[in-house]
Image (cartoon, rainbow, N blue to C red; front, top):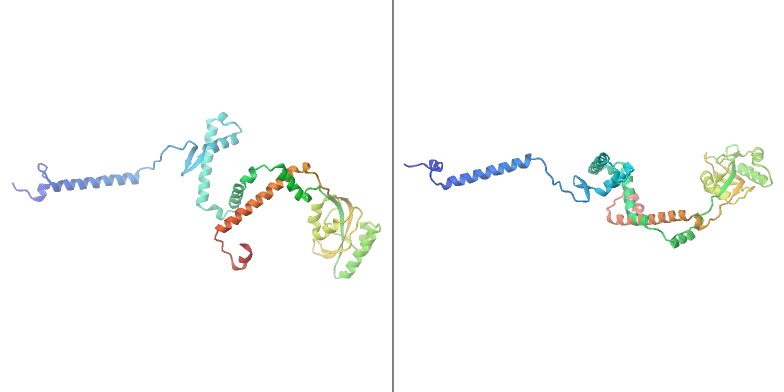
Length: 315
């Protein structure tokens, strides 16, 4: 009996090379289909093995066991061995939550528009750069050397009780008249007249920029400004300044006269009295140098482009 080619293929009682090829192809297609289905429908699976130093991995980022132990002790106030499982699980959840939020903040580039995040990053980088300076203990010799070079910084606080009188310049009291009254008041107070009597006789007024109580020198400096502060430094108790032309806090130009009621001058103090302050100041100076060097290096690596009007001075 004669078979057609199609019948020969499906005649299972006889060998057929064509049938073998068809079956092989069908099997391959079925295998690829099953593999594809498994690939695109199976849930993601990850290895449960963690490095021994890690407590968890959050999107591939580790949470260290050492950090977990430290945070557990800080939060509970107990030694880690004395904490309960519930306390530890609470800390684990908090650390995972924190890591997810940090990763989200990086993902949305939070530092580009949140000033608090930017400030925290700046402080964090500076602390990293300053780590060696913060860890180092200055020697006694280095502290004494710094103290000697900056001894003017280490003095007892000076104290003043001073009155600031002014002869204001106004349309009815022009500059020449105002100066004449201030000069006359200054001479009268040098001869023993009280400030209150000088105010009444010569038409001066108390600016009230400082009260008639004891004030530290730096407070007087802040309230009266550099010009009058320089004049005050020349006066002892009972001293009177010459008429001095300045602008007072109310922006009324006038001629000022200072009367020093009480003066306690600052005096240098010994190294042992301010050793801790010297250490703080030395470390601050060293940190500033390291921070500046780091910024200078970063500028050499950065592509900074400026508006033309700032190109000369800001780079």
